[in-house]
Length: 426
Image (cartoon, rainbow, N blue to C red; front, side, top):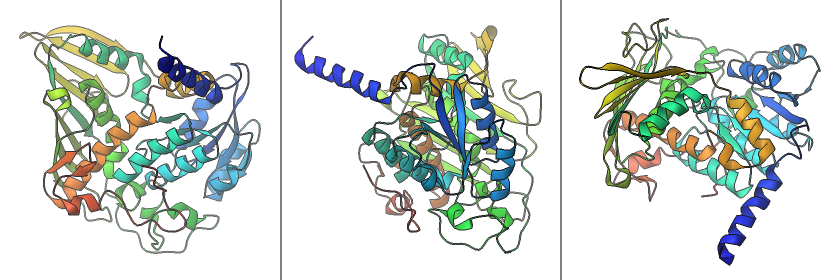
């Protein structure tokens, strides 16, 4: 072993030692931020893991915060402002389930405070943030996991490995399906901010806007100021699986079209959209398609037969094809006769993977390390930008720009509302 390699390896070991908890028997103290919807799942998942204590809760809605705290066996500390919570040196982990527009800034704040972070998908609200969240994790040497829980399913891990091993032959194309029953959100008027809600903290980096119910709990997904449409809500899961299965990183070309069909309501983002991606990793061209539908739809590849939704993936190769149903099941059909091939169903424990990695301190143990999450998230943003400008984007990963398209490049970031400004590291 040469001296340079030894020093680099030693540095990696020391970094892991700094990141790791002293032993598996020591309690990992977690603070959960954002306590509605997915935040309730965070609380349930951590409660199942031995030697993990949810020591603090944070939410800008006093009613939601108090309701969550009242259900805990041991009442945790409560905060409305994450910045105050981060002053607590005893907290090891911040677990974020807030709206998309706050994910990156809250993760950066947490890394700066020396905390490890589990952040829900998508990890960023725009292209600029996708770079900064990774750069911050590296600068402050923190472990950051995106909530792409499919990556922790043994069945899907097996599915991807089988494609790597040649089960389907040359895999040249993937499809992501997000056919989810979504009703109209209607119209809601401007009204006073509900009692106990810190609306300024909720807006965070987003521009000032009068309060309406449609711009608040859950329906914020359908407004560009806060969400990324269903591509960034449900669709990020399937896009991440598609990219993972194809074994690609950034696309070279992105085209998206769609619209807001059937309903006259407040929603800004499309409820129906089709995106096509071209990849050229290592000189090998591959393709990905992604589709969002919002209403009645057929099931494809046997995906989602148990309910009205079709959520999953299809992979096509020279020797057969594969269907991934949801987060935990895959099936294959091989040869010209489409004979049934390997299949498996197995659950996931993404939170346990994260906590185990906090204990080991080894970034490579994370199943959805933030750089992987950020790359998948950029596919969401590029499709939405293509839809909004109405043309194909030619993306150059080296310069991190859309070649010759100043209008598209201007949509890579936003004007941040002070003091909620996402800092630039890269």
